[in-house]
Length: 171
Image 1: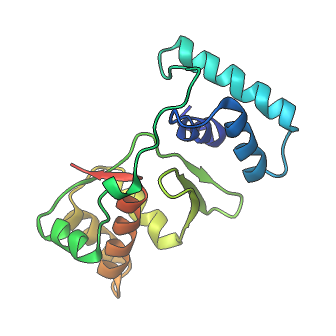
Image 2 (image 1 turned 90 degrees about the horizontal axis):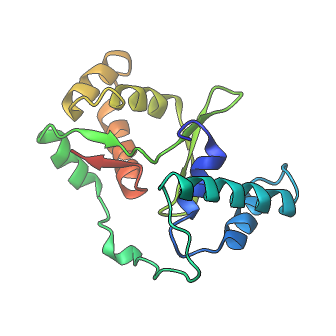
């Protein structure tokens, strides 16, 4: 499921606050060049039933209470600078899925803010280094070898986005 953008998106939407129909409608809006609503609904239903059989989700008759976005910490550049000084490790969240597009760019979806994020060439390089679970100072050192100017600012901005969109966590 990790490599399948649609499966990942269904899992992101399956937070207990949406019905299968609402998930289907969301996918219909997001993937405009796709199957009909009925086909999407069948796909979502089959997928979630399989996930329930495997113990990944629990299907319920009524929705859960929505979590408050105010409960989530908002990271600033200063916070990430401190993480860099402390040589923290950022781990890419296991639920995050990245899709390689035909133009060699990467996109991902943030369930936290409901937006797609297209990674720049530099961000893609940083992500590749971060996937090795290196401390931030090592990530910066590796990235700076090729991108001397502004590499720290690019890393801090990207790490801030990853944390605030729920795509990474601090180890």
